[in-house]
Image 1 (cartoon, rainbow, N blue to C red):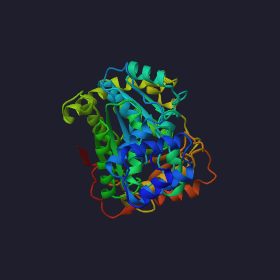
Image 2: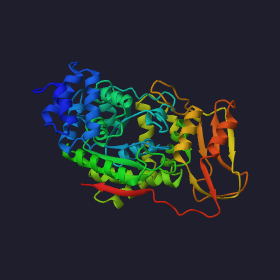
Image 3: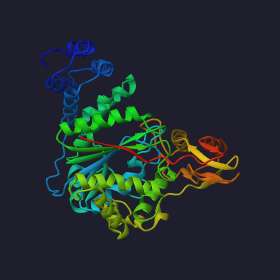
Image 4: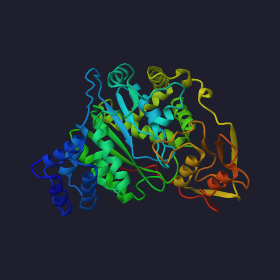
Amino acid sequence: MARSVVELIIHKRGGGTHPAGEIRGLVDAFVGGDVADYQMSAWLMAAFLRGLDDVETVALTEAMLHSGDVLRLPSVKRAKVDKHSTGGVGDKISICLAPLVAACGVAVPMISGRGLGHTGGTLDKLEAIPGFSVDVNAKRFERVVREVGACMIGQTARLAPADKRIYALRDVTGTVESIPLIVASILSKKLAEGIDGLVLDVKVGRGAFMKDLASARELARALVRVGTRAGKKVVALLTDMSVPIGTTIGNALETREAIEILMGQGPADTRELTLALGAEMLVLGGAAKKTVDARQRLERAIADGSGLDVFARMVKAQGGDARVAKDLSLLPRARHRVEVPAPRAGFVTGTDALELGLTAVALGAGRTRADQKVDPAVGIELCAKPGAKVAKGEPLAVLHLSSKKHAAELAARAAGAFTIGKRAAAERALVLERIAR
């Protein structure tokens, strides 16, 4: 670097901008040990307060991307498109989406994360399948994507290692909620997969990190803009997260629901979001010209069982028990079930996604620290969602518990997440906006 790290911190603190080379030099020096954690933390705070423009954000994304291995997947001849969700409650979409899109001709190399806080993680849900391994090396990852069409793994130590270290600093220095830093973190990992295109599911509402439409729109536009400047095809959908997706919260429960979608069953909103995101993926991958045609292809893949077949082959290729595609009883089941009764008659007008997500964490379905283990069997099954009419004492939800020790308190907490009124609330759209270049 032409300027010292102290000079870079002062420059950004004063509102200055960095040329791309300075950003790359800073990240390289940090990964190489020449910039201390406290110095990078100071620069991150300056960037948090003063912001980064698109040139700086692209440079940061590419520097973190190239801090480790970048997968090329040369033997995969099909177009490669992935999906990323910004996190929500009951979001099991990736599990049914990836094999369904692969069945329609677009390869899906997917690197996912674990749950933290009130949001669930795809890796935890997949590991509810007996034997399923998300720890797959790059060579095997490429082979499974080539032969099956989809592979779903966790981030390895060699993929975007700078992002992992920088995020750890952001997490403890109050610099997480910065759109440029969020954009660089998301895209550096996703671009490392060797994809041609990316569809983003940016959640909006009580159960999302972005609580309001304006901030979610700002994040989505930045992701699309920076991803496009990095040479990828990128589309974002803003989707509602005021209410949990589907009828289940918890790892095995959500995996079961995702498989039911591939069986042609499952809740309407889970199916709709799968089709909406899948249609965008097929268009980006060139397997369909319009989303209406893409949706029809996806629906056929459900009807003829080809999506379920790809799922079973993916499970087998990753060491899991492929029989789960036909026998859902192979998934873990909790020892106890406790109903959450409606306190009065009326219409369910709201279900607080954040509170239900936190209740699921209290059950053991999630974690508040990265080193915590989760119980794959526990969770919440929703019996009534907004618009449903309920009688007094009728179950609003069923808790799946490993122990009844705190069942009463947990049931009371879950009950508090439901709002019951005299009239049915207006139906809320699931997909709020579409953002593309």
